[in-house]
Image 1 (tube, one colour):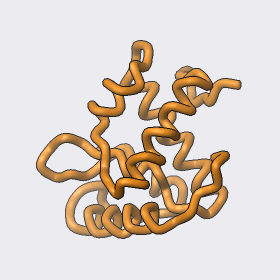
Image 2 (tube, one colour; image 1 turned 90 degrees about the vertical axis):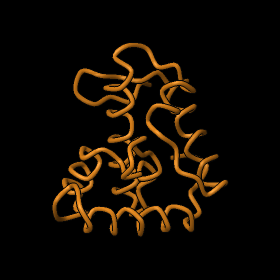
Image 3 (cartoon, rainbow, N blue to C red; image 1 turned 60 degrees about the vertical axis):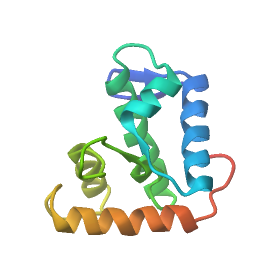
Length: 126
């Protein structure tokens, strides 16, 4: 079964690898960059679109189950140490975040969401 968003899909193997990477980041209480995930997962082209679609799908699954958004653990390499604006737009669509996708409100909400992800006990199956 492939996880799908629009015309982009991810193999079951890559999906499980993504979940495993996020679970490991959670265990170590670390954030992971988009670039590091792309390198570790070796997604087929278009890799960034595939990763983005997979993270948005995971966010939707987490939101539906009223869990903290594991995709909050994935951040840009830039100085902000925040996810891309698309993450905040996705969180807003899911009813989890409101406000501009950059600036203090986004940074503050993100820090809280990361703390909730670190504290939450996720079931083994997403």
